[in-house]
Amino acid sequence: MIDLLFDVNLQQLPDDYLTGNWRVADRVLNRNDPGSALAQATHLQLQPGLLHVEAPTQQDNGQWTVERDSLLSRPYLQMQLAREQTRALVTRLRRSTDGAQSQLSLYFQSGMEMQLARP
Image (cartoon, rainbow, N blue to C red; front, side, top):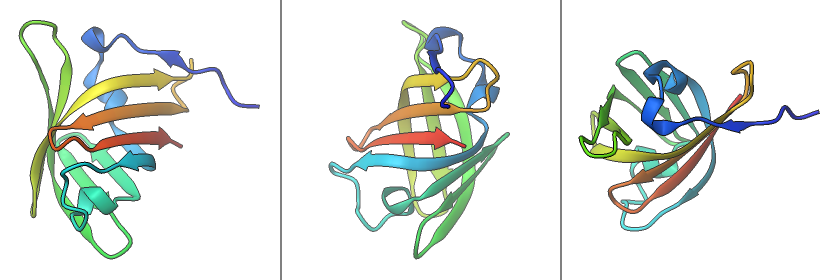
């Protein structure tokens, strides 16, 4: 049985809700380089300050931080990898009550959309 997932208020999103090992469940490319690690990613590992991207033919490491806009306090993931730097708006986060299951939706400045799932 699948646990019910509840929307998390993004204006009050604790940064640690984003940490962990994420599987790329779906992605829509727009202007993003289709050969980049993020465009081909199958897994993202977000640990405090550290980012690891796994793709079928490559891996990349870097850093990530959460930034918030001053008007609405919307969370953005600032990602700095060895081969690319980008910013993604967190558009939705859903979690089970125990936090074991989560779904995260990101909208990148390139127009790429990515849906992540955990576990």
